[in-house]
Image (tube, rainbow, N blue to C red; front, side, top):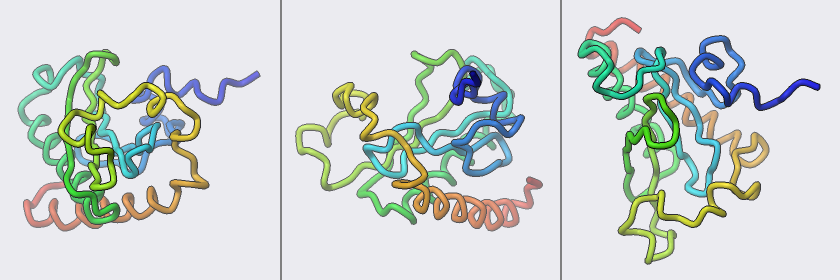
Length: 164
């Protein structure tokens, strides 16, 4: 039997070989991916092309592109999902490779959660099937975010004279 989620064992390599179903767009520094969980609609992740252990391991020339691409994903999520703000985070505590989280934050979130990091949401939000990404519930939003990322890359890379 084929494991449908084998791509999760190496998200970066599966993105490179086209088997990571969460990839939204290939960017200058890596891959924009929709988050596995969508209790905050529009949650995205940026995976680098190489499995660096941390941001500090990434060469300076790639680091600036990586952080810039992270901001472009944020711009796309802001445009499509219209959250009250965005949270950007890079931790490396659970997964042993560099990846950046882009979390939209909304006015409809419980007041007791608004002032705290998303990681303090109950585990059920992260693990429950109810909040997991599905094409049926989140596919149109994902497509819109992907189109906006491409549009922003074209505009930003052209304005900075950067080659994709």
